[in-house]
Length: 157
Length: 155
Image (cartoon, rainbow over all chains, first blue to last red; front, side):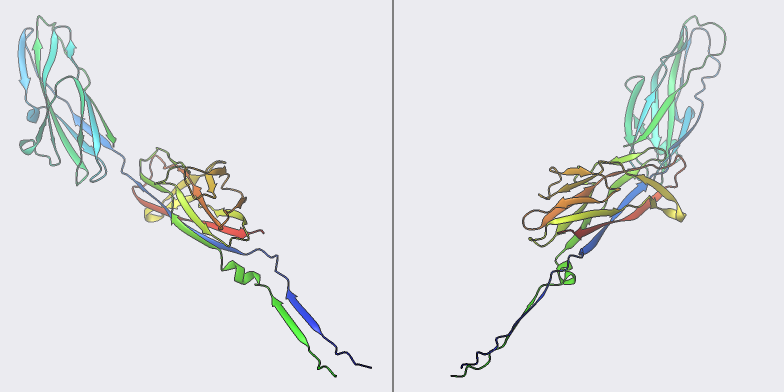
């Protein structure tokens, strides 16, 4: 009788673990908050004018605006100048100067072709100075005081 | 003839789960980039914005393709002097693309886990957008936060 060898076959199969495998990745979210823009200004005054007259106030002696904003951030400055202060009191020949220094003598002249417009600006220091001048022309204007607002709107680009 | 005993022991060892885990890679390509923000003005970044949305690339094994995606979402960006800038997320702010294309995403809610199927080679990309809401008196300066995506093999 032949003794058949025992063939032992042992299979050890480590069953694949069903436990979940996981890994993670990260990234950085970023943003920069700019400084809020501020504008302060002083009036453009023509003083006393006769009922029929013309008087120019040059920009360096006119209204002055100071703008503070984020340094080196480009902005758009929109302006709106009134066409008249009242009946027979017409405004025109607007002048506008811009400088990053509080010095009208070295300021850049901004071309103003109409009562409304805009231009771009930037300031390494975050400060910007504007000077506004104009010519008032009266024609049989009534006696009294006249005023109208000048509006500047500054927005980050 | 006496045959010699032949004993064979076959050990078939399957890769343990830990070894399989090494086959998953999640790479943060970029975070959400809000750029310049103004105090008091919310900034929204869309998940379809290829330049500003966050992107994670997944590289997995080709034979195990169903995964669970779970974000760890920061509630705020941190800034100068300990200032915080709130972030918010909505249902469609995240997107998954088996084609790894920002233009071909399936949107999902990043606030909850999402089950996705990787491509045949085991690839996929996850995108995220969100909203930042600076306060009116938000301190100026640079802000940042860490965004984490965890990918878990399900099968």
